[in-house]
Length: 242
Image (cartoon, rainbow, N blue to C red; front, top):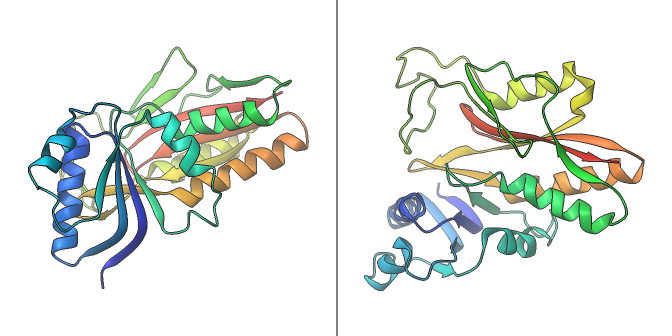
């Protein structure tokens, strides 16, 4: 039975985005996937997806290019709320900023213009083999100490180690938040591989996190650990509302 989506949003129309668009096109052509609308978001009118659109690479597929900044597009799309976003999904790029956290920060600043809304550094180092703190308070983590191919679907047996993959970042992040009160409640956006090597995040989960921040923030100062993660790689940040 084919996977069904109302809208799939691909972040970026360059090398990664064009590969994702190609794979989704193949999945649709082979009846493994159906999507009412596939949107590729890139501000560059000469990006690779634009060129491939002109060449007819996506003929027969409801795929279109939207020329906008990623933040601007997400601000409009995700603001519809979780009920309207049921059946919508985002395909993130491996090299994109932590856009989900950025969107939640922007929403919180708009909601509470007189309050301090910041991204705090992690008070505890995530227990992963590879981790790096960025100057902007974000923290990047990975269970891999090697370079993974873009089309890895993170199977039960790791292709790099050839052993059972006994790790999952969403589980690790939730355990970390449970054991460290300064991290606050965890909102984890799990990027799972759906079809033909393409990983997606359910859009309604991101919108539900905005409601969580609103509820906690309306009750007083709060902290929410925001993570976008696959089983192996992730970006973290502590959203603080004071």
